[in-house]
Length: 125
Image 1 (cartoon, rainbow, N blue to C red):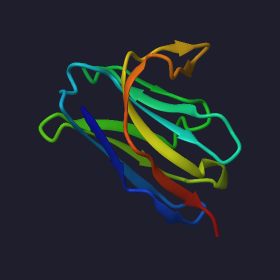
Image 2 (image 1 turned 60 degrees about the vertical axis):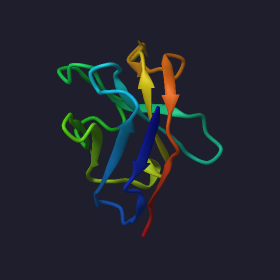
Image 3 (image 1 turned 30 degrees about the vertical axis):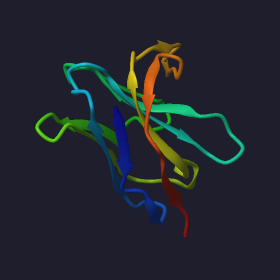
């Protein structure tokens, strides 16, 4: 099983990026996919997740209204559209497959079974 995240880069505040997570070795119908991010010196946090059916999505409060998660089952790819980016969105973004668990609304790591390499997002002027 492999998850390959891409699409990161340097963007100015207010800008946008679209991250992609290409999944191989399993289908999107088998596991939910969750995006996490980790800023320097901070713990990794859940950003957004999408269920196996694609009908249920979850977002961290900090990104609601700005980020949108979607998927293309034909391409076995999950996307994270990030708009109105802020400097605090800076970090390494990872996609992971596993059981999507929330605790007090926060997406949890411990349900994840497979992790991909991250892609760096830098929001700076």
